Length: 217
Image (cartoon, rainbow, N blue to C red; front, side, top):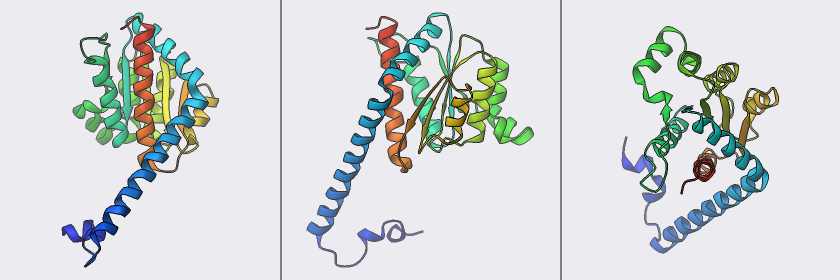
């Protein structure tokens, strides 16, 4: 595959350089505006819930609980980033125990191959989840079957369940209505990119609120 096929707008012939740069600047400004509005909307809708969720998470951590984070694709990367932030937050903050379930590739691939991909998060949560733990599931669509099953199993075992979703929340919103997700934060956008950017902001806010609830800094 050629570079031209990946970036046709840069190889469309004798394009005017100033026009191209102006288009890039306009597109960038539009995206910055979109994510700014989305972050504002999430804060306006969920400020009190974010504070309540952080307090509940802090109580679990204070009781010896761990964060067990999971998701697919980019959401898996976000789960790993949240776990890493907890474990290695820097010298001014309190380290907190956390695991990203997808980081255990041997377990994930064994379960996907032998049991079914829809169980790759549910089985580890069933086996190792403790009532003081926190299950954090991320899904841009809100409909990831393995994330939903993981949160359901975590709820059955008494873990605090937290979900991050996009669009209108999808099946995760329905699970929250059934009480299987204690705290659900929905990024109301149809853009996967903006959803994931807003989710990143949301879990960073949760992390800082947890730290402050625990007395750090």
